[in-house]
Length: 197
Image 1 (cartoon, rainbow, N blue to C red):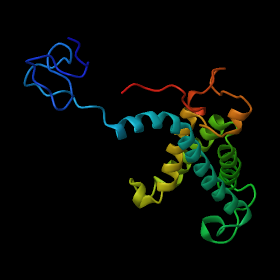
Image 2: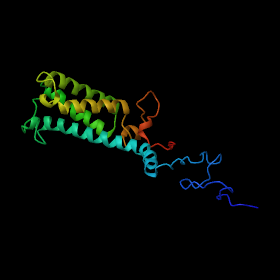
Image 3: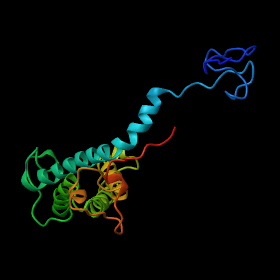
Image 4: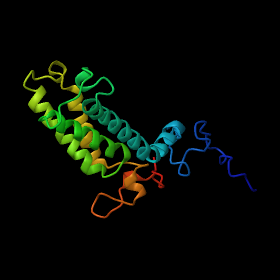
């Protein structure tokens, strides 16, 4: 007698969670619960995250570069409230303010565009580390009290971009620059492989 494949064999208890009979075919012993099916939302998130990563990194890069360039433009040209919110500019050639503003404007613009991202981000990170330790840290140990939170955040953000590269939608990717010893940057393009849960 031919039995449809979904019917349990005679005498076997039906497992309501998996729809299969317990035993060797399903891997469950009698009385043992069947494994739950994978969470569809969790599976979708695991499959979407690798594809979204280069674009999220590109957005992070662009916003960080734009904000940094705005600081430079304010100090050099007196726009957006001017240097330190005074409406004025930093005197040309003044150390270290004028040089910091040039790094902010040029480096921030390069990072925003994703052009020479790793080198520009490294210079920007170093300039913020210098600013933190020479200007802010002498006032107090904690960034909340010494006014150094923006310098610390920019320093670590640019250091992150130095390591990760530009992500997607960058001029480096458009021009085919890898920035990593001739190998293509894996974070600069969407992932086409799916990871198993």
